Amino acid sequence: NEKELINGKPYYYHQGFWIAEFLFRSTISAQRNFVAHEDDIILASCPKSGTTWLKALVFSIVNRTRFAPTDSPLLKVNPHDLVPFLESPSRIFEKIVFDQPRLFSTHMPHQLLSLSIKTSDSKIVYISRNPMDQFISYWFYTCKFPNDPNAEPVDLEDFFDKFCRGIHNSGPFWDHVLGYWKASLERPHKILFLKYEELKKDIGFNIKRLAKFLGFPFSEEEERRGVVEEISTLCSFEKMKNFDVNKNGHWTLGISNSLFFRKGEVGDWKNFLTPSMVERMEKLLQEKFGEHNLTFELPD
Ligand code: A3P
Image (cartoon, rainbow, N blue to C red; front, side, top):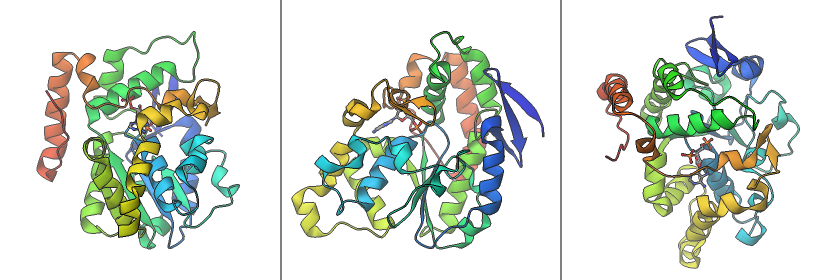
């Protein structure tokens, strides 16, 4: 397989996508072997698009009769330990005793999902994010990962150039996004396509939309009791960032939990990208997404 180094670490090209070496075998295994159940829920995303938030939201929605907000496992367990990755090298999901439905997540592109996922009635929720913010989030994350205080800073220009050539974890982002976008248009009852910016704008509406899509709609009585607001508050950036489990000192997937919570805003790219980088990215977005009628909010 073709190989590239990103921040000194090897990535391999597999059927159109770049995969980190440490995820390579487990990704191929998930692609070939994962058997979905009819009521499984799979949360998919390109890295740094809002995966952690989506996990917290969906976990809270489907388990809301099981746990009161004051008793939520989210207070003590990082969402990544509640909703495991299909392609996790430790195959952690084989060790979890799930309540129903089973909740999984993946950074795998739709193109690489197992046939069983694609042909079963399991549901997929995809979260996308404007690629400029996704990029900045990814850059910060890579600079800190794996929390080594002596790590060399990652060169922004070089990292950006690779990102725009599709060389990043699960990249190219445009093929990742378009795979799920097209599949969601073909099978709207199976795949729900969300945008991070839409969730930021109206989280209440999107929690109800998610619940309905997943087959767990809120009753009028629940809405009157403010259950939607409770979930939105519990999963808000400010709250989640400050749960004890998400402070320094707690680790998940070999990463300090605090790394999953940086700023949680829309438009932070403006503080870091140069005008020529913005121009290059805008061209790229037009070229890749223009004909598909897919736009991302890029506030100026
Ligand atoms: P920033 O780096 O821009 O702050 P992922 O979960 O896919 O790794 O994405 C991480 C991004 O989502 C980070 O973006 C992180 O701060 C943001 N995020 C994490 N939890 C969030 C929440 N509860 N609400 C909104 N954004 C959140």
